[in-house]
Length: 309
Image (cartoon, rainbow, N blue to C red; front, side, top):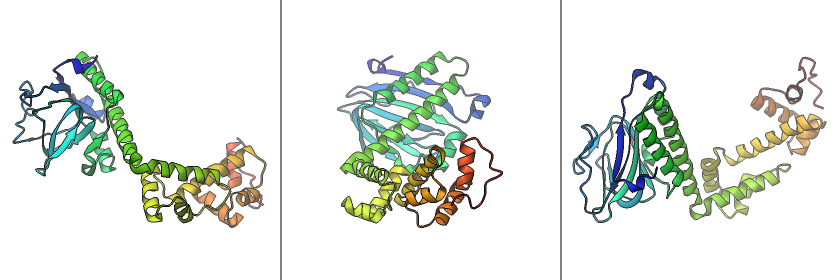
């Protein structure tokens, strides 16, 4: 169903104790098309959700609000107003004062979903949702609109386990918006291309000693900037990423070839077999020969401590 053809469609749900035990539950989901020179917000919302745009409100849930048409303003924690436009998604936190409204001349289209639960709280504790990143640039995303529309349909049908279905949609929305918004940031200024280029160089030189600082120099970027952005992009510092690549290749060589541990450590340009052996044991919990035998389905009881030579 295309909700762009409707002025408004929203649903407020009853949440049971069992629903809350699932870890995520949805309180409300909706769509509103606010035409130019129209009042906002609409008056049909129940007490606790309706608000005066000048006075704002505080909710006891999280909300995703996605703008697909028009523009307006957002205000959080009584700070200065932020301009928002088509393609922006903002996140409201429980207990956070906020206010938002469309521009009187343009109006806007908004999709929203309100939710809570222990799973979400855990994601917040682990910084997947933060107040430092409440306004995300998603752009026009048909998949995201479809997820909101599907959530509205599930809420309207209100069948058995609809809350659990909606919980899955919330996680899908969260994963999608984090992926799209983060990649948009890296695409600005060619950042993603620089990091992808660095990753290719690392992969193509896996058998060599790759110096991250020299790599940054070859890419015409400062190492401090490269290290920070590379870690933000991949989750690993450059040196750690290179180590992970080398160990992935070492595992492949141990399983698929008859090379000795000494030969593999030499091929991957480690300073000594003992150093490679020690690192492998620390990272995997296996010695190289134990890993080879385990991965090939053999017993490890008879592994000789000298057999890697």
